[in-house]
Image (cartoon, rainbow, N blue to C red; front, side, top):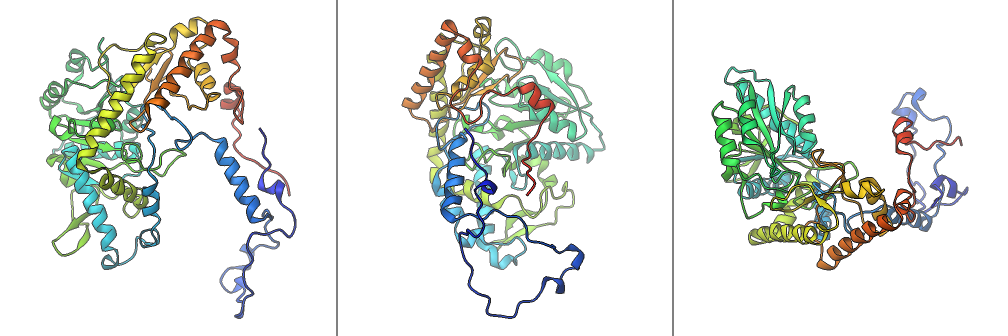
Length: 483
């Protein structure tokens, strides 16, 4: 499906709004800027009426798949529905028009909101302190690693190794390398959890810490956490938890109670702020008592009379974000927490787990399962036997688009062949889960009847099957036309 660009719709003289005539003397721009930097001719901007602009962008929005449109079972990403009350309250002028350089006395409401959000996250995670600065999950990972680095540095140590399980999130190794560490991989056992014996072999006095995703990317809870903690403590290594899958733990278990030293949270996942399209995100970092003194500064604090930014921490790793993080998303997460309430969080986790296990039960007879351990909020299917019949995981993902469903994550985690990682979240109804299961089963039957249907899919999307090898080698994401 081809849609014209606004430049193609442009007609000389058309406009959406007309500004009133200027009733004061106009000051030329050359009074403020060097003439060499001023335009010699008008920019060739499109000239279109308001209704054309609205129709154009409305049409574009329906061409993309999004969580407001249908199921988005993107495993490991918790693409849950975003309540619109979050957007409504974030748009309040008193919040939307704030400037981070305003005097502290003028922004007490915003500071109170951030302070209370820190307190809520401390309670939810069981940790001792929180920084709201990190702008994404991967950013939170990097901050957590820098905190670990500072911990060992203050003890006069220069540890060089981070342990990462083969079932971890893919950003963990990248973050560790950016922080200057070398990586040692810890293997999973036949149950899909850390192989404790392999961990014991890898632990040494050079290990700064372990980055554990829990539940891991297989959707399995790492139940050996106390044993893992004891092994790490034997060499004074720190225990990091990737909290991207926190949606499965709410109200059931708290990372701080499991001995976690530092973790990040993805507010743009578990706490239902907008997710995708490259951002913005927000990935607060929570720590226990060991690491409080190293948190990024400033920290939002309260002295009993007013809220303020505390810059006094001399052992801090420093600021990690301009001003104090992505306030608009912090606000949305705050609204979500207040709306859900203390008792509601456990229901979120329970429903996410029930939904995942329901789908697993419906699909396990048609697709192979990566590991047979009890599942939590997500699970990994294997399309290995479908591939042997003529259609691989990528083909199944493309065919799903024809049924109005976003595909699950494919080919990750790497320890499952032809992996398809499914996370339905708690916000989907049984009817939508059944629709997804029915479509997956129908696609499996199509492979048996005519696998070519899948190899040429999708058919109903604006962009059909791409030559992915050519696209990777000759990437062109620009539109240019001489005007």
